[in-house]
Length: 561
Image (cartoon, rainbow, N blue to C red; front, side, top):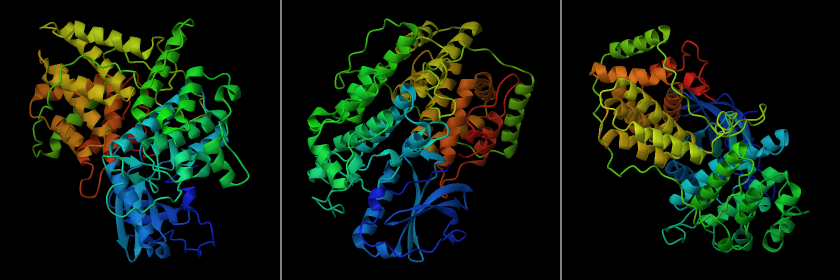
């Protein structure tokens, strides 16, 4: 089933049903040709459409004209678009356009092919522990990004958590979101949600939302905790005959212990979810960053248990958990050379050299990085960190081992065999951080390769490519594309060969470059389109080398999902 941006249940009308709106399938609105209707709510409709200029599918959210005549409703619609435009993040549905055409207001959003969490649970049932942790970590990362901008979602629920076929998570529908000023008060201007008005979905609503008292990012943590409880228990913690009954229970009742419903779950996971659902905001995680730290510790403990059944349960403290970081000195970003206009012949020659290298079978068997997660059900949408176990070390142990190996080859001198080993270890550590979505650590490491002595040319090249990947994952497409174009069009043959070699000879690094280019293509706009030269590079890198399977990144091969 295909899922675009879901229409929040809270937008459905509670009184008379709105007059039926004509189906706009087959019509064109501005730059968008409407393909079919995906859903509807009280405020409008969501269609699947094709953006004609960029040849990509989008979810087109239309505001009903009669609703748009209400100034408050139009302000909410506009605020949603503005908030999404600020929240560029891999786990948040992106906004591409917001316009009015012929009296019709619309918002073009990233189209997510897959299903929402409620649909997933209805079809598959509760996910296994590691897949559940992956979903939790990705949503928490999205909430952290929103909180960094002072934005509260206020309607976190399974319908607003979208899962792609690859197991990526996208948080949707910031239509009820609220922006806070630095002091935690609503940002200046019109209070379009009206103080004292309850907004949200009763099954997942925080006590402070029910009571109409001030909210802050801990409100989203509560609703997310209720969603996680539902995900793992198979039902929400509170149910009743009416929405009012359910809302009152959020204020007065304690949920049945999750461990009583699912005794197979790790006690630490149950403790995390119950802490998220504390009635008093002071008893919850005070930020999504704290939540992410405890989730990382739990995943590490579970991975360690695979290799050592006697591993003791990790002590989760939330506030005091410190993330491990690579000891690389801080430094400013290194300016990269500006792209020069080059003939398309350069790209053709570059592509030809890659193909010839592949045909010659010039592959070096570097040891590939391994994920420490067990396989999720093959029929389920599998998360990137839920691959089959290929290494029994915990993530912390693996990171420490990789750091030691990286440091061992810090100064390889002129010994090319040591340079080659150093290259392999650096790629492994960089990919490890990227796979763990530790983008700050990844960029710190990659930029250290660029600027920290000794500046081994092949190490520097890894750093430049890695920095471009991180920029892509942070949705900074223009800066990322500029670096990739500079590498493709490099005048110096030695630099060009290093770039070609690094991409062709390490499948995991190629995979990350493909993912980065895919992010950049998805974040393209009419004003800043995805460069044709990089589209060519994507197709070449997506071609399997001799003895290799096709990269798992279907989108990088030209298939947008």
